[in-house]
Structures are given as C-alpha cells and as structure tokens.
Image (tube, rainbow over all chains, first blue to last red; front, side, top):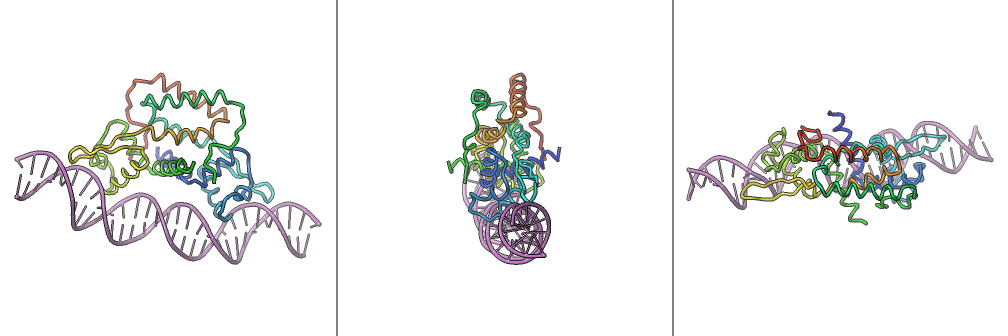
Length: 123
Length: 123
DNA sequence: GCTATCGTCAACCGTTTGGTTGAATATGGC
DNA sequence: GCCATATTCAACCAAACGGTTGACGATAGC
C-alpha cells in the first residue's frame, strides 16, 4: 500500500526533529495556543508555526481556531501505525517482547498517575 | 538526556525513508550482502551503500565484513527506545492501550510462525 | 600475476529542510 | 474606528539530503 508508506515517511520525518518532539511532550500536559507553544523556544514564532504545520500534516496534532487563538491538541492515535510498523521488527526477538511486556506492566500499574514532565526531551 | 534525543533524531530520520524501510524489511528474512540488498532497487550501488551507512549509524543494522563480502544484519533492539518513546504518548489513551494488548496477543499466538513477506513497504 | 567482483570514496547536482525577517491578515477590546 | 494581539505568508539563506558518476582499494579465483 503506497499510501501507507507515504504516511510512514511523513510521520517518521515529523518525529525526527527534537523541537517537534519537545512540542509533542508539551502538548501531553495540555492543549496550548501557538504563541504559548513557541514561548520556551529560542526561535521565531514563524519557525514554530512551520513545525506545527508539519506535525499537523502528519496527523500528530490537530489545530482548532477559536477566536484569534489557534489551539493545538495532541493526537496520539497517529503514532499507532508507525508504532505497529516498528514492532513488527521486534516480534521475532525475545528481548524485545520482554521490553513490551515490561512496558505494559508499568503502564498498567502507573495508570491514573498524571504525567509530570512527559517523556523528557525538553528544549 | 541530550544523547537520548540525538539517538531519537538519528533513528527516526533513518526510518523516514521508504528505501531504508524496504531494506529493513528485506533483512527481516535473512542477512544479506550489500550487492544483494541493492539488487531489487532501481538505484546505484553507491546510493544503497549510503543508505546502509545511515542505517548502521542508527544502529538499526550491523555490517560485518567476511572476505570481500560485507554482510548486513538487522538489529531490532535499536527500535526499542524509539518505540518506547512513541508509546509514552499513547499511554493515556485507552484506545492505544487496547491496540498494544491486541498486538501482544497476536504476537504470542503467532510465535514460531516464520515471516512471509515482512511488514510490506517493498520497493 | 591478472582479472573480475565487492564495496566505498569523492566530487558534483538539484531539492528539501530548518531557520530568519518583514509584511500581511484576522480577531478582540476599548 | 483604532490599536494591540495572534498567526501566517513570502522571500530568502545556509546546510543537509538523496541521488549520480567515475576512480579507487581489497579480495577471490584462475
């Protein structure tokens, strides 16, 4: 399926930039306006706007305009295809399977505890 | 952790190219020599050699020279960090959790059945 | 020792990327 | 209506990307 391949291109490319991953981390905590997203970065607003466009095209976030403010919201589902693609490479390695079992365990036991700083990778 | 961020940059960038993902798919089935990897692609050997260099630097494959032939081997462990990073964005979404539980189920039930064509995305 | 094969290197090319700046386009509040 | 705020657009820039070609360095086989 060619469309799938293109989607993976776009998704992985979007994730291959530390600024964009940091933005995703920030959005884990809450929806944010574009200006607020840009605030902690040592970079022009226009640059952040471009990054947000790339994340939006990848489906990793959605942007909704309310008044003059555009709100950015994380869309974690978009990661699923890429994540599943990646896992297909691990499925014949016992080590990797263990890693995912462990992930699920901690995921389940920590369920309900709010995020504190996201997965790291801040600016 | 800056080193972690850089590793994610390199890993995701390596995955953001259809040729490189196709190479990984091919290596799922067996280890291959550089020339054999290049064979199905409509592209120069030098170009494939560069792609293999990028995959190697990302730790996604390893290359071992035996005689005049250089063998390429998949290293699925390198995907683990990136995969775990991705999952951290899904962990507050029940839908995603379900997806991973389902993945684990099918993974466990299909264990032992050899791969037939990899996860697709061929050239 | 020749010659063919395997793979990389170096130089080049056009395109894309990630950033800048300044102007433009809403919308909101008084 | 007017000014401030929020966001994007357009043009530009240096650097990186993905590809080509041709020369080159090893190794294998005869």
